[in-house]
Length: 295
Image (cartoon, rainbow, N blue to C red):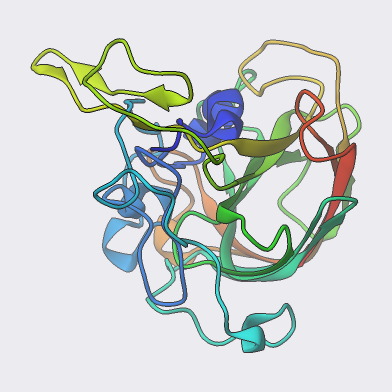
């Protein structure tokens, strides 16, 4: 049983602005699978191009196999999925979504990914309103090839980063709002034995409780998280920036079906690159990781 991803908790206000549906557990991604029942909100399809971008209600639920184990979701053994050698996505991208591929590196992490989602839009929910945001999301059809740590699972990238205009240019994070997070899970430590039913569980175990009662206790999967944050959360709350990113837009075209905008603001089909230096949370997994992506 894995905890609700820390990176999604920290970035929920930001990613909710861009329609990131936080799954009820770590996203089960792969070459041909869908992440969660909330995938339509996390990654808009052609039938949901104008769906609400208010984000989901957070709830806590178990994930993994019947025993609460971590599984191998999100990690591909097919080395052809290394960045720059990506296979086509296992489903249909949203009309204004661009597939993104890239690499992640750090002292304790090394991975490549394919078919993440990137899109640009003008939000009607930011404070002040009408900020342009680049949304980056791996909760849908993304595949990862990980070499370090080799036993990690449930790889996740999510972010929403302000750019000052919907036009080609270089947009660093300095002075802008938003954030970018990265997370993966590690195997349950040896010796963790879970029994009984919540709310009280043995050390290293947890249970999900609701109005109908508590589920059996299951093991807690450790997570390693990295988060970069801008000068504000895009909702009016300022903070001390951590880490940094640069969005470079090489091509921006209005999404034709918006006709100038929809209930959440106009969308754009964008191409470019994203580079980021993202510090770890609480000393997790070394000091920083570097992300490079093309979309």
